[in-house]
Amino acid sequence: MIQDKDYIIRIVKQFSEFLSKLLLGKNEGELTEQQRVFDTNMNDTFKMDFETLAAKSTDEIIKLIEAKDSGHQIPFFELAGHLFYFKNKENPNPNFTEKALKFYEIYLQKSGIFSMPIMSRIGELKKV
Image (cartoon, rainbow, N blue to C red; front, side):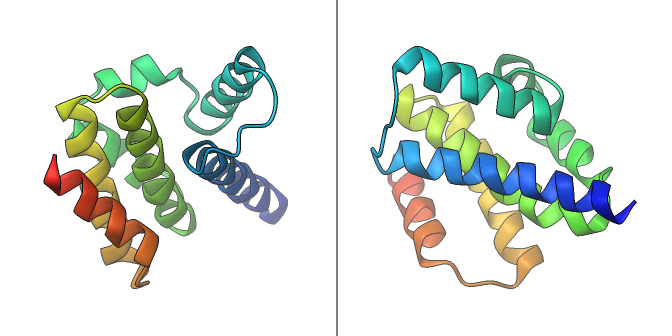
Protein backbone atom coordinates (compact mmCIF):
# COMPACT_ATOMS: atom_id res chain seq x y z
CA MET A 1 0.00 0.00 0.00
CA ILE A 2 2.81 2.41 0.84
CA GLN A 3 4.39 1.72 -2.54
CA ASP A 4 1.10 2.59 -4.27
CA LYS A 5 0.97 5.95 -2.46
CA ASP A 6 4.60 6.70 -3.34
CA TYR A 7 3.86 5.87 -6.96
CA ILE A 8 0.88 8.23 -7.11
CA ILE A 9 2.81 11.10 -5.54
CA ARG A 10 5.73 10.47 -7.91
CA ILE A 11 3.42 10.61 -10.95
CA VAL A 12 1.80 13.84 -9.71
CA LYS A 13 5.21 15.44 -9.10
CA GLN A 14 6.52 14.33 -12.50
CA PHE A 15 3.48 15.87 -14.20
CA SER A 16 3.99 19.11 -12.24
CA GLU A 17 7.65 19.19 -13.28
CA PHE A 18 6.69 18.56 -16.90
CA LEU A 19 4.23 21.47 -16.82
CA SER A 20 6.83 23.71 -15.16
CA LYS A 21 9.30 22.97 -17.94
CA LEU A 22 6.68 23.82 -20.54
CA LEU A 23 5.81 27.06 -18.72
CA LEU A 24 9.46 28.07 -18.53
CA GLY A 25 9.81 27.43 -22.23
CA LYS A 26 12.27 24.59 -21.75
CA ASN A 27 10.64 22.58 -24.49
CA GLU A 28 12.57 19.48 -25.26
CA GLY A 29 11.31 17.37 -28.09
CA GLU A 30 8.71 17.77 -30.76
CA LEU A 31 5.27 19.22 -30.18
CA THR A 32 3.60 15.88 -30.95
CA GLU A 33 5.86 14.16 -28.40
CA GLN A 34 5.01 16.80 -25.78
CA GLN A 35 1.30 16.31 -26.46
CA ARG A 36 1.68 12.55 -26.09
CA VAL A 37 3.50 12.98 -22.77
CA PHE A 38 0.86 15.46 -21.62
CA ASP A 39 -2.00 13.10 -22.54
CA THR A 40 -0.27 10.16 -20.83
CA ASN A 41 0.27 12.21 -17.67
CA MET A 42 -3.37 13.32 -17.70
CA ASN A 43 -4.52 9.71 -17.93
CA ASP A 44 -2.10 8.56 -15.23
CA THR A 45 -3.06 11.25 -12.72
CA PHE A 46 -6.71 12.11 -13.38
CA LYS A 47 -7.85 9.02 -15.35
CA MET A 48 -9.34 11.31 -18.01
CA ASP A 49 -8.24 13.69 -20.75
CA PHE A 50 -7.93 17.43 -20.20
CA GLU A 51 -11.15 18.30 -22.06
CA THR A 52 -13.17 16.01 -19.75
CA LEU A 53 -11.54 17.51 -16.66
CA ALA A 54 -11.99 21.09 -17.91
CA ALA A 55 -15.70 20.43 -18.59
CA LYS A 56 -16.23 19.71 -14.89
CA SER A 57 -17.11 22.55 -12.54
CA THR A 58 -14.53 23.76 -10.03
CA ASP A 59 -16.57 22.19 -7.21
CA GLU A 60 -16.68 18.83 -9.01
CA ILE A 61 -12.90 18.85 -9.41
CA ILE A 62 -12.44 19.81 -5.76
CA LYS A 63 -14.65 16.87 -4.74
CA LEU A 64 -12.69 14.58 -7.05
CA ILE A 65 -9.42 15.64 -5.38
CA GLU A 66 -10.85 15.52 -1.86
CA ALA A 67 -11.98 11.94 -2.49
CA LYS A 68 -8.31 10.98 -2.79
CA ASP A 69 -6.11 9.97 0.12
CA SER A 70 -5.53 12.99 2.38
CA GLY A 71 -1.77 12.77 1.81
CA HIS A 72 -2.29 13.17 -1.93
CA GLN A 73 -4.65 16.14 -1.90
CA ILE A 74 -2.08 18.94 -1.55
CA PRO A 75 0.04 17.81 -4.54
CA PHE A 76 -3.13 17.31 -6.60
CA PHE A 77 -4.35 20.86 -5.86
CA GLU A 78 -0.93 22.21 -6.86
CA LEU A 79 -0.99 20.13 -10.03
CA ALA A 80 -4.53 21.29 -10.88
CA GLY A 81 -3.40 24.90 -10.46
CA HIS A 82 -0.39 24.32 -12.73
CA LEU A 83 -2.53 22.49 -15.25
CA PHE A 84 -5.16 25.20 -15.64
CA TYR A 85 -2.53 27.95 -15.51
CA PHE A 86 -0.60 26.26 -18.33
CA LYS A 87 -3.71 25.71 -20.44
CA ASN A 88 -4.75 29.33 -19.83
CA LYS A 89 -1.33 30.50 -21.07
CA GLU A 90 -1.75 28.33 -24.15
CA ASN A 91 -5.30 29.48 -24.85
CA PRO A 92 -6.63 32.29 -22.60
CA ASN A 93 -9.95 31.29 -21.11
CA PRO A 94 -11.74 32.93 -18.13
CA ASN A 95 -12.87 29.49 -16.94
CA PHE A 96 -9.26 28.25 -16.81
CA THR A 97 -8.21 31.46 -15.03
CA GLU A 98 -10.85 30.99 -12.35
CA LYS A 99 -9.95 27.34 -11.85
CA ALA A 100 -6.20 28.00 -11.67
CA LEU A 101 -6.77 30.74 -9.08
CA LYS A 102 -9.03 28.54 -6.96
CA PHE A 103 -6.71 25.53 -7.01
CA TYR A 104 -3.62 27.63 -6.25
CA GLU A 105 -5.44 29.29 -3.34
CA ILE A 106 -6.55 25.93 -1.93
CA TYR A 107 -3.01 24.60 -2.34
CA LEU A 108 -1.54 27.53 -0.41
CA GLN A 109 -4.16 27.22 2.35
CA LYS A 110 -3.84 23.45 2.80
CA SER A 111 -0.06 23.23 2.45
CA GLY A 112 0.79 26.20 4.64
CA ILE A 113 3.69 26.85 2.27
CA PHE A 114 4.53 30.29 0.95
CA SER A 115 5.47 29.89 -2.70
CA MET A 116 6.69 32.99 -4.51
CA PRO A 117 6.22 31.46 -8.00
CA ILE A 118 2.61 30.55 -7.21
CA MET A 119 1.96 33.96 -5.62
CA SER A 120 3.27 35.66 -8.77
CA ARG A 121 1.06 33.43 -10.94
CA ILE A 122 -1.96 34.34 -8.79
CA GLY A 123 -1.08 38.01 -9.25
CA GLU A 124 -0.74 37.52 -12.99
CA LEU A 125 -4.08 35.69 -13.21
CA LYS A 126 -5.88 38.39 -11.22
CA LYS A 127 -4.64 41.08 -13.63
CA VAL A 128 -6.43 39.41 -16.53
